[in-house]
Each structure stands twice: as structure tokens, then as C-alpha cells.
View 1 (spheres, rainbow, N blue to C red):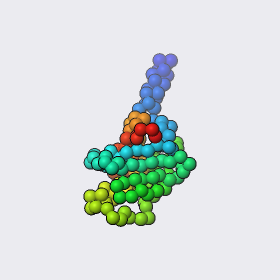
View 2 (cartoon, rainbow, N blue to C red; view 1 turned 90 degrees about the vertical axis):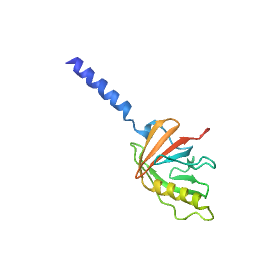
View 3 (cartoon, one colour; view 1 turned 180 degrees about the vertical axis):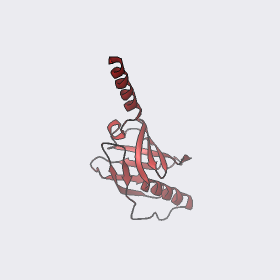
View 4 (cartoon, helix red, strand yellow; view 1 turned 45 degrees about the horizontal axis):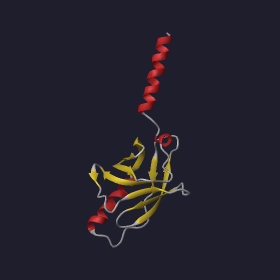
Length: 140
């Protein structure tokens, strides 16, 4: 009987290691992330397309593309994996068609985000209608 209880405890402990809650693993506040790929399509790294979670603004995220920088509202479930973004009220102006497409793809993907997961302290994914891969920028 004792061995069955011990085996159950070990199994539950192992499961919690493989199914961690992102918000308990990593605090996004004060971090900035480079968008590496959207749906496995690489995003150009020059200039960097970033998503930043500034200190002092717990409800805003800064999204920077080669077209613009825009603040978006977001909601994060601190007890789970839920994450969501509001759509911006403006469109980029004065961009090349390629830059405008990347901006549009990212904003559309962010609007469909439902959850996130931590791969490592330096790599996260945002999941939903699309998959956004991000890499932490140094010093953030």
C-alpha cells in the first residue's frame, strides 16, 4: 500500500514538471522578445520585430515592427496559461508591401492568441489560431 501511494506521488510530481503553469515559471513584466517565427515561417531579424512587456504598465504590451510601434492591451491569467491581446485601432502607414504584410500577420496572430507556454527562460510560444515563437532579447 505504501509503495502504491509513493508511486502515485512520484507520478503526480513528474506530471507537474511536464505540464507547468507559464505564469508561475516566468514573469513577462520588464521583458522584451524578438519574434522568431509565425506558424513556422521565419520573421526577418533586421530590423527586429519585438513584443515588450514594460515595467509599470501591467495591461499594455509594446509591439514594434519595421512599420510602427503600437501599444496593445493584453490580459494574462496569472494562475494558468491564458493570454489574450486587443486589436490595435490604427493601421501602419508608409510601409513597403512586404513590411505591411509582416505587420498585418503579426497583429492578426496576436489577436488570435489564447495561451502561451515557456520552452526555456529565453524562448516562449504564444498559441491560438496561430503559433508565434519568441526569443528573449538580452538584458530584458
